[in-house]
Length: 413
Image 1 (cartoon, one colour):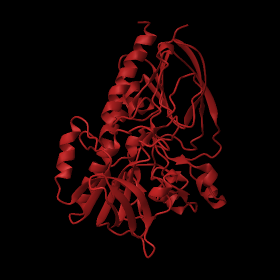
Image 2 (tube, one colour):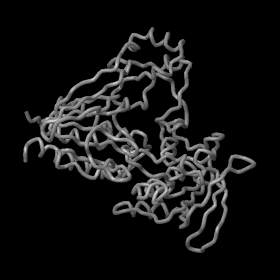
Image 3 (spheres, helix red, strand yellow):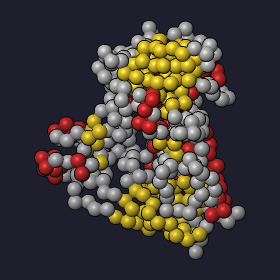
Image 4 (tube, one colour):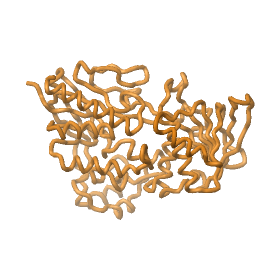
């Protein structure tokens, strides 16, 4: 029997948009999100275009829409493990990992502080550690802690077992869903900077990625919004941005990630707002600021302390006598090679589809980079950065389009 329900794989901004568009037209929608919280990469940004809003602004609206719509059901710490059937009638198996935390949001900060274990904080891209009982951000949704059971020490387990809100006996479960159409909104991941050995990634103390910069600038980040050098907590006075770090490179990502130039210009503004005397240099191949963003680019580049240099960065190296960073660059205009010293270097690493190097249990075609390139004849539609590199606004537009196609599929049009 045909189903009018729609499955959305991925609970980031695109997934939430697709789900809500379908739900508000009367369809039952299931959101499957593999992390403990909805919101995706947008949660990790300090601000996002076009209005340079903090993530809580747009996400809180989406969360309220979910709370107020009984057609939306979501599952976190969940993964699709099997899909059988055909367009209009898919049987989907979903595995849900235990959260070990009940509903509601009691303040467990005192408990967390008393736990011994410290774990690398993936949400903060390794800039700090976290406790094994945690909530990624104050505006996280659902407002429920999650327990990283494998990281608890024996002493930690004793404290957790004494907390009535937490239950370490929870077990994994599998649920079955029947849906007529599927929207894949699995989003993107930052390209692995440790592959960029010539650019100092992983070896140079004060060489960070653009997403790490977003976390440093965030008031909810590891430094409470102060942009500081990771090595010594010092205030950087001279900062370099290296564009296309791994992008447009056949050895890494062959495509342009679309958002990197705008991200660096935005982050240059973060720096200049915090440090009026700081100097920012952006090394680029081409500055791509499409459409409405060109005015923003011109505004940032009009700053007398922001310099744009067309050139290819050949190397990023640690200063042998300290924590400063040396950047070797070939100026494309003058043809000269120079070496410059900086306090902090930011690599504008590209966005890679989350499906790169992995796969879903669905027969869906992807290209060599991991972007979805088909499946519509099966009632399966890609949305957001699962399909191509996009900013937040265009991801939402893409998700609305995918939702409309999914609705047409289940309604038999």
